Image (cartoon, rainbow, N blue to C red):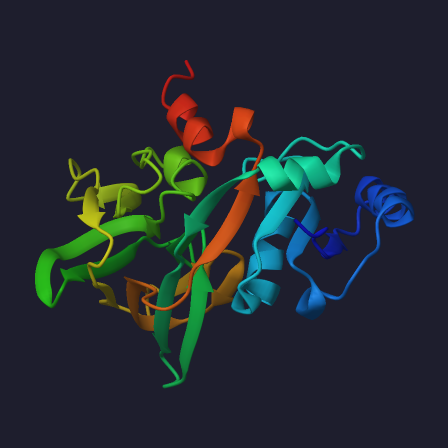
Length: 255
């Protein structure tokens, strides 16, 4: 088996930049377009940034944690990188597609590998309705916000909002309200991954709402449609002893 060509990508932190220099002295480095594998050095935020910037290339990504949060990363070591990549287990992720219409009439399309969240922009609670596959399921949700999370993202913001942790490969997404006031007892739903979720903002002028796909925000939205992407997947590589499926499972037993 030939040696894989690696593109090293690092966040701006001193730790990540030092690791970039160390690995660059040990391995030949290639541009992402010419590489077989992308090696992302940083935290989960940088991993998401890498997927947004280079996910369309279809190259697998082996991340190493050099940030405050590293759920999507492997432990950092500067030795045996080629052996680790060769032995790594793949985790295929399918992002969400967000289509947002703003009060001004503009439309924005974004991808989200963790979640799409809708949040109130002012001190007043948001008022929204929720349609699933064209059928209204919630006539009026009064809340601070609501989100749709992928299995990989279900342990992040979704879990903090008391949403369910979804097993990797379960072909599901989580629909989770954030501080719901009405209906007070509604705690969200687990949906099939191919469900089309549509939010309509019921009072956009008095109660404006923003939509965020991972870290990319669109303000003053009036309608947001979310569905799992049909043609985009990314592959993350993990050390066998600490793969993503096991991490998601373990999160459900943390007390």
